[in-house]
Amino acid sequence: MSAGRMDENSGILSDAINQPDAILLASLFDAIGDGDVEEVKSLLDNGANANGVGRGGSTPLLKATGNRYLNREVSTIQEIVKLLLDHGADPTIADEEGRTPLHEVSVRSARNFQIRKEEDSQKVSDNMQAIQDMATSFIKLGASVNSPDKRSDTPLLEAVSQGSVGLVKMFLENGALVNQAGHNGETPLSIASEERHIEVVKLLKKAIAYIQVKALHELIPGVTVELLKLTVLTTTPWYIKPNDIDISGDLDNYGTTPPQETEFRGSSETCSLITDLEEQAGFADNPAATMDTPPLGGLDDGTTDAVS
Image (spheres, rainbow, N blue to C red):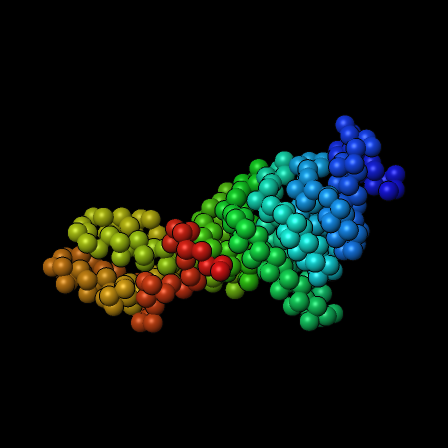
């Protein structure tokens, strides 16, 4: 072990010089930093703790996913991550800043590779797929897409800021809170708009529109005009444009639209209000959308686990 590495991992060794477990863990951090897959495997097979904690609360999994020296070698990182997970690494463990492996792969997700698209587009595609595969593994093992770090930033906010369409879609399908703001009060949609990530903006607006339409459907039985106005006009975020929500075309599980359902239940005033809102706002017709097949999957309350 080099002196530099020993110093880097002094948080591990400070109280345990010459203790085998501590030395194994420090060596594991070294091997991960070097991207030495074979050494990582050997150390894990010989008892290195896959959940050992180093400086700043870092774990081997956090070290691997946050390794900035291997930006282009994502396949190497993926191999190391798989080895760690196979040896019991826990992707729900956060460091002292509240960062989880899901935060780290989200940061890694796009910007470093989009810059080099002209250089090697296949490399970019392979890297992005590897990142999404790692994120999927973490979610399957219980990592939360809504876990904020100490700055209040979530994996979704990180993926949005990077413009990673694939990760954003995955997080939304797995219950990411689409309106949860980060450390500066910005929401995912405001960040995507500011960064001009157009495809991410489209995804987020679809997610928000679905949530609003579902809320409207849930209010239909016994709904009052006042409550409907409050739901549709007051709580709809300011950044949702009228044609993002199709009140007449969004069918429920029985194939009825809100106007049809309110008319069926005899609330003509409510039906008239919805119809007026539709005419005034110019909602686009979208007969294919149904409440049991939302635009992006389980977006309503985070209870639907889209990762199988």
